[in-house]
Each structure stands twice: as C-alpha cells, then as structure tokens.
Length: 298
Image 1 (tube, rainbow, N blue to C red):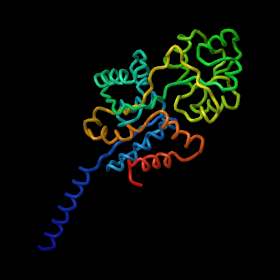
Image 2 (cartoon, rainbow, N blue to C red):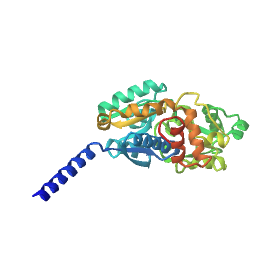
Image 3 (tube, rainbow, N blue to C red):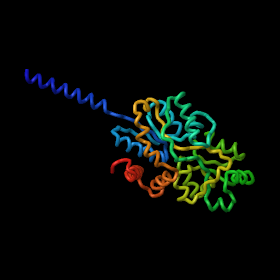
Image 4 (cartoon, rainbow, N blue to C red):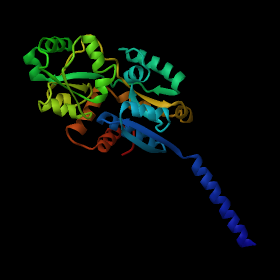
C-alpha cells in the first residue's frame, strides 16, 4: 500500500511539473528575407528573445512575398520588414516619403485588414538606390537618376543594368522608375539578390540596384545616384507580427525597444560591412553588437 502511495505521488508530481513547464514554454518563429541585413536583424532578435526565455525558431532566406505570406499564414510570428514594402508591395498603397506617416498608415490598414501589427519603427532606412561605379559616373557626368535617364535616352543600348527579379517587376522598382523618370534600359540582367553588386564591381553591368544600407557601396567605390524626383518611398525598418503573437506576448515591443533605439542606417551599414566585407559570421557580429551595447549577457 505504501509503495502504491509513493507511485501515485510521483505520477502527480511529474504531471504537475510537465504542466508547469508547458505553461512557461514561450515559442516563437522569427522570419527573415534573403540578404545580410535581414539575417542580422533576425539573429539579434533571436538572441534577445532567448535571453527572455523564448524558444526561438528561425525561418530565413525568403523573398518579400514569401515572407509576407508566411506571416499572414502564421508560419512566421514576427519579422523585421520595411514600411515602404508594406504600403506599396503588400497593400498596394501609394508610396510615402515620411517614415512616421507611412508607419501609421500601414499599421492602421494592416491591423484592420490582415491582423498584422507593426511596432518598433527605427531609423534604418533601407531604401532602394541605383548605383554606378564612381569613376564611370564622374566620367559620364551622371549624379542623379534624371542624369541617368537623359544619358540612356541619348545613348540607347549603351548602358546595361543588373537587377533581380523582384525589383524588375514590383511597382516601386524598375517599372516605377521608368514611369517617373521617362526612360528604359534595353539590357537588364536579373540575377540572385546580392550578386548584382559583384556584377557592377566586375564591370559586367554599368548600373545596378542596391540597398542604401549595404556596406558594399562604400567598399566597392560605388556612387548612389540621387533620387531627385523622390520616387523611392521610405523603407524604414519596423517589426511586423501577427495580432495573435502581439496579444499573446505583449512584452515583445518592450523587449525589442532597446535594439530599435540603437538602429540607424549608419549602424546597420557597419554591421553589414563586418559580414559582407570582413567576412565575419552573422552570428558573431549580431552577438558582439548586442553584448557591447548591454542588450544580452556575454
């Protein structure tokens, strides 16, 4: 009888412990697109959430559309994305150059229509840019996209363009640039995201799309052509999560606030530089930044 009592007590204890363990199990999936900045943002988020007791899974290497679908389908719980992408690409709204106004409008529509909440707007503005090798741009007298348009229209077929499939087809990409500035390249080569920088450096293309926070712009001696007609919208980064995630873990916004407060385009460009140019690992760069700034323990 005593033995039976001990067995029953043990079973009750195990059941209670399992229930308590399950109740404290905070699971979350962090998503990211397929370029360095996104890998870094996802990894820093993972480290910070793990520090707060979350069990984190990462889903990375997604294009914008695939990541958005994963968020809407709740395969991803939280990601870092860009307000310009949200408004123009996901919601079909007109581009806006003011980041706070764009963020507010995006949040209002996306919460109501898609149950997506945006938080932690920061100063990382990863807007698109058209780049040229600095020496070539100087030789041809091209400093702005209007200058580029004039040159292409006067010298059709001379300059080649390196792009990627997404930029070549989205309305805030090449189609919109063509419409706004009144020109069109005859020769556009689509390649995997990121390879276009090497193509421009290696003189396999004369113009390329880039991201304003990419460290290779300085490292490869490129020049960003001035968007003198303000076509490209604000692409400030912000956290996007499902309403379900936001309501289940309301502390997420506060957890990520110290990171968001530190992030600027200059900071992001330096972090990208460490990975893309100095060839450090994403994990090491992300962790070192967080430790140095007291956001996680070493």
